[in-house]
Image 1 (cartoon, each protein chain N blue to C red):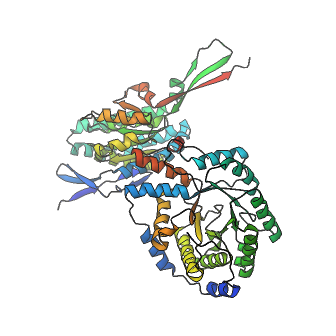
Image 2: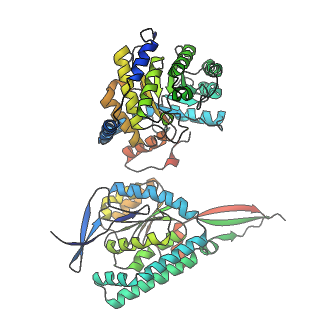
Image 3: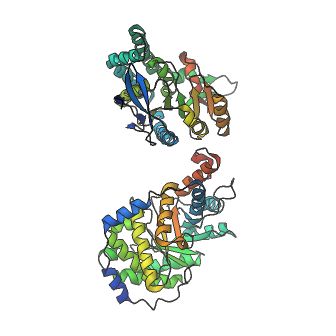
Length: 275
Length: 312
């Protein structure tokens, strides 16, 4: 009988839930064991239902409010900085590296919080036309985003797989394999940051188990994969996704403004000048 | 198939009273039985069959002040071919509309086997004099309705005037003649299981071909418990008179999973005779959409989005 230090749960629809399948797996960190939910197909389905609702709520909040909520998230993480550093050190990072990772995470959240009410000005455009009307490229969030986080143990990398889509108003289903303890710990801070339920769901498990369901699910609008998949995983995802014309991105850019572009859909608006 | 009902001479008002006053229901046992029936797991092949069956039992319904001829045409098109891309999905049983739109609906169903049902007797409240209810029903029948959904007089029922409830249904049945009569109990207004049983028996004795749970206009719609009470009443009525009446559940059944639970209950308690659109119906507007999604999910393995299916 092994001693479980902590049992983590998935974060779905603003609640901490066990996998519907009841299945878990254990992860050992520094001689201590953590129990993590092994997400099933049904859990994914529930998460999508919740994300669809979450998208409606989150995308209709004002950019100003989104900025405040993101900023609050950075404060929550800053408040718990020590426990994050400790957890990263349990994963084998040096104290220096762990501290740096958390500092960068906080800075990045603040950066995206700042972007929340500015991206539309930067990514949208007034297009040149030689007639008496305006032609505007108006940017809209694409909808429900599924994001598979990278394999490095880093809060910053995890956040960079979530923040770009979240900032523009998409709802995100973040899925983690190697760094699930970190992701589910992070989930505990989301609840204190006023995100509407369903706007950000965090799940853990084996991606193989749910690969088909995720890539075929018609109500997921975009799949972002932030790590290398073996056994032709990416190809399978692309093939499945093509049936519902879903966008698939493998390791999308996380640099500056270009990080948000995959998650936007352009609506072109014509408007008379009224001269 | 049940016997076609021609005469109700075998049932006198005194028989009805006797039945009504014997109504006692063990609600704890009822809940337990209903919940245990909800846990059956249905395997993939049976599920597909069940889903197709649910489609064939649907009364596609629109009962809004904003209904227009255009909206009815759209709904009828969907009723005839619920999924235009999959011809193995059957047509629904009927479309259910207000009397003023029966003519339009009748014209649009043409040669399909989709029937036209009209709600009448001043659905959903029924708070008008009897003359008006008769007129309302006559109008719907003259416009060509194949089925009539009426509401019971809840005012009279809750005041204890069961005779009035009974007489009104008898009078409306006389107007209907061969036209299928479905009587809505509005279980949300009746509150207790005993009341549901009483109302069921009164409606059945008065000559209803179907009893129906709800109008769909209340926040409390159908429940499996209410349906269970009604199906027991239908069975008891059958053992007394030999007449098989139908049940229609409506209001609040939004997903395929829930609908399948109703089918399980009907099959277990009443037998497969009742698993047939002549004797069991779902009143649905949003249910059909979910069922279509689930059928496609079973066939393709991909969860579906509502916007790929026709509106109606």
